[in-house]
Length: 366
Image (cartoon, rainbow, N blue to C red; front, top):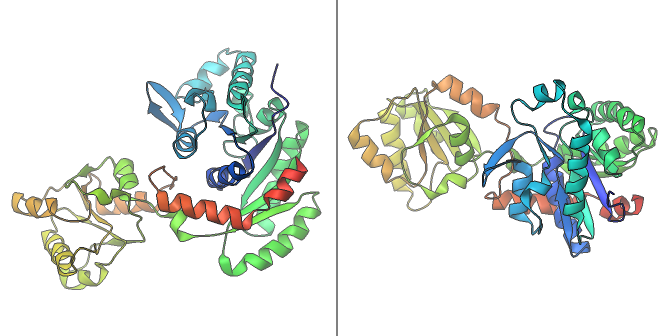
């Protein structure tokens, strides 16, 4: 029998990368101020990482690293969608077994907890191919839903209405909507008109979160992982946030004006003149780093003398196989996920959610 007594809430979104994980991080922080023991579960995970011979969704790993969940990690992500999961299911897997696994995991997560936060995966229909859409899972767990949508007025309301239809078909109630990544100068207008539009759909606006550039800024560690790049020096600043990205295709006399704090410089590995200039600029400013890092491209390894200089730099230098254009494109298109090492981001997320989300209204609706 499913635990039906522990209060719970399901965080869904109108599409991928709308900010469910950001919202879950902030809400867990707020909930832990209200409830002594809070649990977390992501029933279906698709972005998997290896932990102790297990394949676990990276969001479950993040929450377990940031919060004292006091629960086996595998219970927080009972369904891990590995490469051949969908094919095997369509060839004859038993949905009853998957449903039972989700229910058992929820019961374990909810054991001796005062509240459980459930995080969905993508929009309401994600998972339908194996009969476990977000709407269906919310039904299985007998939980109400908060929708997260990207900022604006018309587009997010249209998207919420489309997702609302699927939840309603499953008999699941959406208690409200949170708009994320709203331009700060439009915060008041969006809150006013989006609230009016949502009320016409029978929905409450529970919060409007301003866009903050820091939350979409990658780190050198993330870029190294994305590119499969080699570290050419042992620098602890791999978790510093990148503010701007510059393609070092200019002459060295013009490159110097880009040697600033927070800048990632992408340049071919044979541009030793730019490397030497960056090193000289960093040395001239003392202990404060002038760059977030450098990515050398084209798999062009500098000579031994320059490599020796790189090892002494106080910012990370990576060597990547793709050319500069491909590296710049992949960095630009990178989906930035919060990591437990992103201490500054996590503090900001907690503050933003606490300031801009009406938790009392949310809990009253439950």
